[in-house]
Length: 257
Image (cartoon, rainbow, N blue to C red; front, top):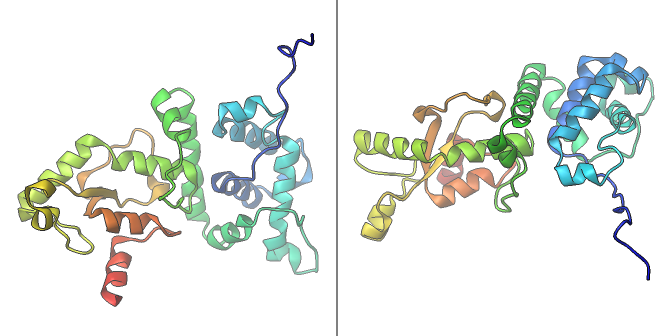
């Protein structure tokens, strides 16, 4: 009888590059073009290791090397397709890339300050995540199907949602609203749960974090004024599009209906 207990687990192919992984690769492409000259470039090796820290542990265990130096090197060359400095002479980059690459190029290539902010936020959260079990749980938590991933990728999206659910902040925001206005009213559509549902709707309102994702930092305290009160419908709409809507944009949408 064959003993299958020692059969090694079948290796699997890496998943498609995630948005935040592509953002880090784009940052390297723009920040240090010399990295395109060799797979052994220190920045390529560093990014390969760092991307492994961002991946699910179970995924890394089943792969020979998650985002190997070869994979990082090839991904940098994929970005050449969108670089006018490279294509103006009729040259082309590697074709088999991720369809998100062009969107990220259009979004960040001419906005290095924002790109640097997003990269710094991703790297700081993952760095803290190596030593904080709570932050690791946030990074590797399950997706929320109704929430559209933000432009900055899954890690900052999850931290944004984590902060929105901070119980103390939610309580403090509600207290602030009651003190100022005597009611919990949606800041977009004006809906008041208490008025519609009576006592069954007392104290019900969602809290939305309005601060840009790329400015989030580990250990930074969220202020009550960084939050907005939204009804559940408006809150869902804010997070259902990419990029996420601001409160002002949502008000304009409602006004046009």
